[in-house]
Length: 268
Image (cartoon, rainbow, N blue to C red; front, side, top):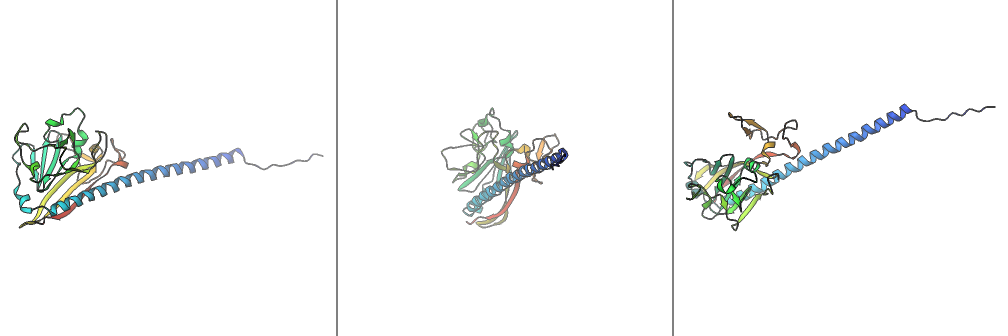
């Protein structure tokens, strides 16, 4: 007598369906993890940008409280020089593709090279001959605060720079870096795209000033831009946005730019 036994199990199709489901599940977990990592990185960059900008604003606010309005408004010169313009209290100096800015408060002076300048400087550039690039020990600065009791950094000096302004800072002076200094050309840090200081109230020794400053990651090529009449890229400072991921040179997860404004006052 023959006895037949029936064994239960999975068919090949059932096993393939199960493996496909597990594969899709694992792939979804990996993709979610990658996306979460990107969101974390972008959040960390934005948080660092906002914190650094607030710290810079606090320092400037304290220095303005120690400044004298009348002195700030009377020490204004240099608009007649080629490559030099004034925007409120800020002196802007340009030469070729390089641009820097500065303003002096009587006790302390603030100087910076723009992000576009830092992004375009190469190791072969002779920075000592470019009056629009502020340097320390031959290296371009980012954004610094310098002890400058007589405001000498905002006064024209005679010499090889054709009555320009000092652009090689004394390394032995009291210099404080407000934003991290780039180690080399490829190092991406936070830097200044634009800074304005304009008077709002002009009365006696006291005065109100509006400070507007745009800070972002120093790789200017990653910021959304348009073209000028000659086809050169112009950073879109109005939108304050980074290039989207579908554009060339985009680094959306590690790019950030924002504009900050505050009202400060002098106090004698």
